[in-house]
Image (cartoon, rainbow, N blue to C red):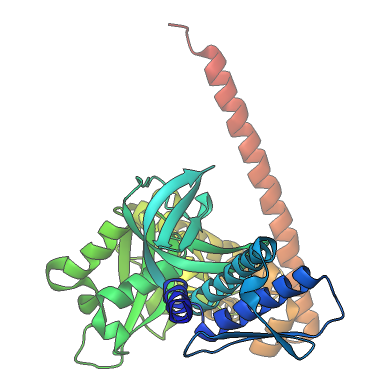
Length: 406
């Protein structure tokens, strides 16, 4: 009987991943509760000890040994209830400790069901993970019994439950997939420097290599695209652009906007803004469907990217030159402003006087005069734009009314 108790404890410890000593302690506390209930003496000194090797149980009440097997059915039921509660609490603590350490890792599980849009995934025989709708890739559905991989996004302790939140939309999910598929990343030869993602649609990953002999882009793509194909298949066809990282922001922005070709990239460090000039035929490619390409490139590089055609760029420079010349300044100041990355009146207004004073060494009264002029021009341009918009709208409405009914 006593050896059987030891075997039961060992089985519970192994199956539920609970410390063996914790189970013995819980058993002793449960038996103390049973003895106290049996005698009904709250102030009595009760002690129970279980030998960890033999399973021998010894119990004392006020230093007098008692036979715990003689307590009866009701105390045994109490001991059982207390024991179940304590083992469940230990199991929750064990699950929490395990998955807190695995936070940010990829786990594999079997789909169980959907609950109000939340996907429930069986991670092992004792743990379920929950993937909210927002953490699921749009357009993907999973059938019960299907094996699915996901990122351990968060681990929360709620009343009587440990809630493991899973994600397939988090950018780190792709980062971890690359680590699994590309050994050079795990070994530290290739590093993922930046990553931007719109889950289910497109991801941009900037990579670099610490070894000149290793091509980071080629290693991530794999022979005949084998490595990247595995990741794309896992994501249900999501497009992945692998970009070569460069410490030069201009080159990095150029790489990030590929496959579109850039004519010019102007950086304004004061505003954190990059103005990119592309030919008219490259404009839609640079912007991407619904602005996705430029949006992801901006997130990847950390720059606010504005894409212009040569005509729009030259128009902005011309307006800037006219605005500056109104203050009495010459073309040299215009060239210096452009070198600072200021290529439009709106840029000039946003920058303000201090950068002009500190970077261009302008006198304060001239700097204030230039910024004031930019403000006036900006208001005038805004009014003209609003007027043109109203005229176009009126024209459209008139054409619609005059259009003959078929």
